Image (cartoon, rainbow, N blue to C red; front, side, top):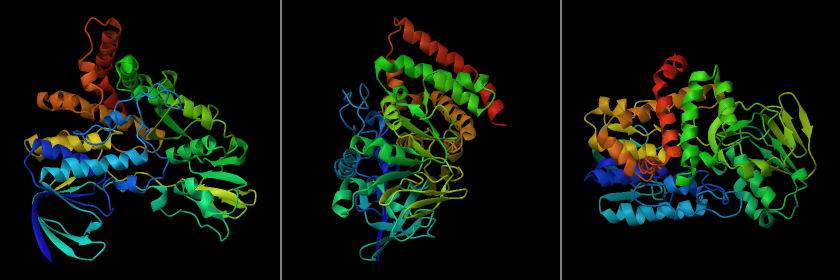
Length: 470
C-alpha cells in the first residue's frame, strides 16, 4: 500500500470539485489530491445524453480561472439573441482542459481517476482504492477532506427506473436516441416521454427537431413545472434592466404575495417565469431554464398523460395507480425520470477536518464551490465561514421556493457586507452580474432607476424573511 500526504483531499472531479480546486489554487499555496470514480474529469457530464447542453449561459459556468466558450451571442435557433450554451461535448472537453492545463500544470494537484474513497474513513487518514487494480493508497490529509459529492447527481444512464419493466417493453434512455437506428431494426410507432423535468423537455425538443411528428409523441407528465425565462439570465448590458427588474420583482413579490402560488403568478406576469400549459398550475420548481422558443416547440406535444407516476410498463400499456393506458405496438418508452440532484438536508459546510460543498447561491453549484474555497482561504474561523455559507434548501414543490429564495438573497446580503469578498465576487467570472452592474454609467437614467428599485426592494427582505421563514 502506497502512502501520500496532501493539504486537501477532494472527493469528486465534477464541476463542484474542480471549481473548488481552481479557486483554492488561486488563493493559497495548498497541495491538492482529487479522487473520482469516473475515468475523466467532469462528473455527470461523462454520463449525460449526447444532445444535452447547458440551460444557462456558458459565460458563468465552469471554473473561475478559465472561460468556457467565447461569449458568443447565438443568431437563429431556439437560443436566438442569447449567450451561447455549451453542449455536453464542449463541457466535457472544457473540464479535461481545466484538469490538464490548469490543475495538473500547477504542480500542486494530483488526480486519481477511476478510484474511490473507501467508506468509513475519517479524521486525517483516508484510503483510496483503484477501481481497475484494487490497489490502495493511504492519504494523510493535513487540513481537510472536501466532499464534492453530497448531492449525488444522477442522470438517466446511471439510474434504475423506479417501476418494473415487463419483457418485450421497448425502454431506452435519452442517451440511446441518437444511435437508435443502429441498435434496432424496428421503427417506433409511437414515442412516450416519461418524466416532467428538464431531461424530458430536452428529449422532446430533440425528437421534434429530428423529425418525429408531434402527434406520435405522448408525454407522461404527472405534475408540471415552473421554469425560469432564459432572458433573465443574460449577463449582457442589453439585458441588464430586465435582469435587475427580475431580481427586484422576486423580493417585491415576497412582501406582497399571500402564498407561493401568488409569488409565482407575479413572476409569470413580470416575464420571469414560464410554464408549458396555462390551463395547468405547476406544482414543482427545480430551476430549469428555458427559452420561449423551446416552450412554443414543446407545446406542439398535446398528448399529455397526467395520471400520476408510472407504476409499470408493458409492451403495449402504461400502468398507473388509477389507470391502465393502452399504447400502440412498438411504442418507444424514453426514461427521463432520473432525479438530477438528490434532496438531502442542509448541513454545515465547514466541519472539523471536512468541508461539505453545497449550494449557497442557487442554482449555481460552481460559483458556490468557488466561494467556499475563497472562504476557506480567507475566513477567520469555521463559525464565521459557516455564517457566510448558509446552504440553500433545494426546493421541490412550489411551496419550498420562497424560503429558498430568501436564504439565497440573505447570503448575498452578507457577502456584500464584506469588502474583500465583495471585491472577489465582482472579479469572479462565475458571478456573471456584479461586474456588469458596477460598470453602469451613472448618466444612464433607466439603468440607475432599475438599480434604485432593486435597493428599495432589498430593504424589505428582513420583513419578508420574518414572514416566510417562521
